[in-house]
Amino acid sequence: MFTKKSVATVIILTFVTCGIYGLFWYWNAIKELHSAGGESLGNLDPVVQFILLFVYVGGVFFAINANNNLNAVKRMRGIPETDNQVLYIILSLICPIILVALVQDEMNKLA
Image 1 (cartoon, rainbow, N blue to C red):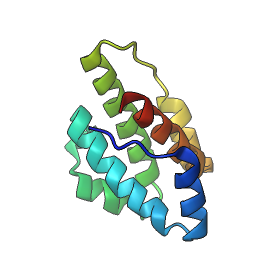
Image 2 (image 1 turned 90 degrees about the vertical axis):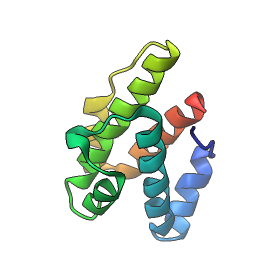
Image 3 (image 1 turned 30 degrees about the horizontal axis):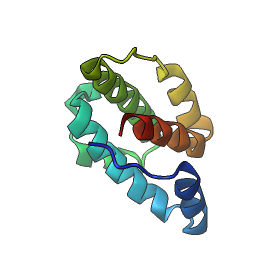
Image 4 (image 1 turned 90 degrees about the horizontal axis):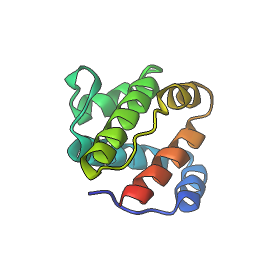
């Protein structure tokens, strides 16, 4: 389902590779979240979601889809859902690296 990755390693590798690892992480996260939760805003394909990351609104789509898919997985497992959608959207616009850390942490908890 979800691949467990160290949050610190993801952040450090993103900085060291000047964001290239961040793109790799986004691609894997989009695919894993989509396959695990199956929920997507506007039924967007993971490839389209990844391409939208290169446009400013792509981070917002990722934030909404990440929240929806994480909650879908929690719902399937009977875990109480948390609505972090507003927080994720704000972080996607202001500081995406913190969004990456929070989403990876949630994915690690569900792995």
